[in-house]
Length: 373
Image (cartoon, rainbow, N blue to C red):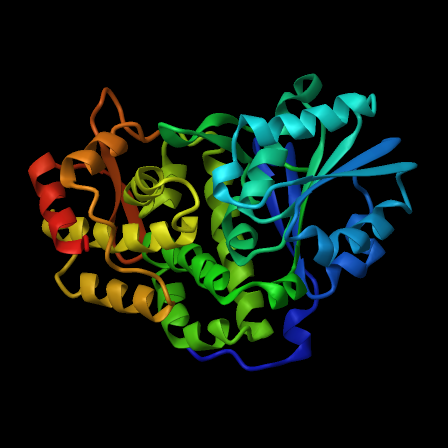
């Protein structure tokens, strides 16, 4: 594998198709620089009299006017609703602000919603679209690395509950994903690192060569090299499109995309939403899941320090909060992958391959003791 080098041709707009139901349903993921200012990015979207942009107080000042300019070319009315920023606001109260605006403006079932922001905005907008009038079209316009490589793709929509993350939601696919790499220029470094957690996960679970590439190009991505980021976003979307195309509703294969998330969701819920960013919790969760993979004999011992080193280099925490083993186990039993109260973990079975596994509580407690502050 070689490191990425800067080349304008490498960041021309690219399209990753995502096919569902043997190609009868699907949509495109557009990846490139300057997409928000290109009319072509918005051609062929569902026709309607009105569009509603859902964003937050941080993202809107940066990108809202540009998106409104493009949408005004094809929608007679373009409204916007701004939500408070943060995982702690991914709840019913914020979701109702979207419904309030839709109802106040007498929006019909053809109204198109546009999710302008990161994973929180994308998840909530998708859920609102799934529920309003039993389903209206929506478009993902992700502005964070985490959203571009993961949460905007695949149709998972949700809000959080105080007892569990993403426990209330629906599978509902967007009409298109528009991932403008230029939006990453304004991303705080902490948010960029959080997004790299979701990039890293794709290597051990689906593509060993991509894991090699990530190790070689991590510094370039941290420095926001557009070519490196373009390749990372494209490869992650290709892998996710392949997985979701086979298992849209997470009945089997799609669960591998939750590598590190069982531990990570417990951290987020246990600390209170927003204390750690989602990617930070997933990064730490991947260290724990890597250790559990080794302890169960699925991976050789050297896999753990390799993953821990990579995650630490990305600027992510490798030690979890000291919630106590019993509290972790209690929280993980609320995870969506749990069955009959038994916790099931996504573990690596060989580089580029993952699967679901149960583990004894005492072994999980040993992992937690090794990786909690």
